[in-house]
Length: 300
Image 1 (cartoon, rainbow, N blue to C red):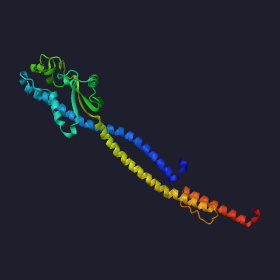
Image 2 (image 1 turned 180 degrees about the horizontal axis):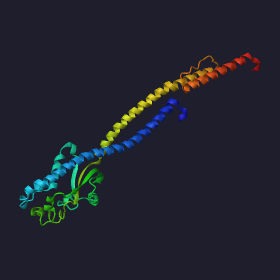
Image 3 (image 1 turned 60 degrees about the vertical axis):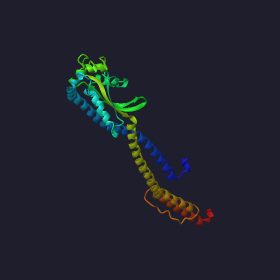
Image 4 (image 1 turned 90 degrees about the vertical axis):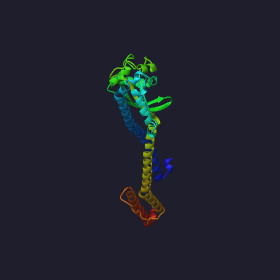
């Protein structure tokens, strides 16, 4: 197929093939890099939220719960539970558009409220934290109810002695709390023990779409630049190679029909110029041969 095309068309096809290959490779590499960057950007935002929630938990245990201890004897107040305070604060944050897609859960192996019970995936995360106390953070993707989620998890540690007032043994826990949740769940915790994980998740498409938009923008710029390069190369080929070759071809055809007075003016000192010089030498040799034939008609 290429044999039937001119030089400029061949160069254009080759460059277009290079463009397709370069865009495909660049798209794959860029997607990987940008998804990683999007993960890190969202992770940084998520960790700020998690630090805020952790601060709320510490504040609740240290200052709110002690103030409500007397009231807990007659009525259980969820405001005294740090996990409750954390969820309430996060729900307020979720009312803002930039956080509406974020979800927060304090997944525990043995929670007081059964809704905080860790599922199989969360249980694996917690067990990893328990096996490796140096592991302070995990992130990645998971599937939940048919939806892909990007998550970040941190170990939930019993760091405040005040937590044990409700979660050490049921006989020291507020009776009003036991009346609501029973005495089978949420007990046996120990100070500095990892009992769960704080997990914040968002739809994975938020990460992927953010990376895809950046990738499309960058690839569009690359495409435009490459098309501009192809046009410039074609203009250069036309002026420096194709047009001089066409001129040499036309003159050579004229010379072949007997017009030996035409000049092969070398346009430059490059390969095209050398070719023109070779044609000129051939023209001179042909002129000498023709002159000898005319001077010696008997040799014909």
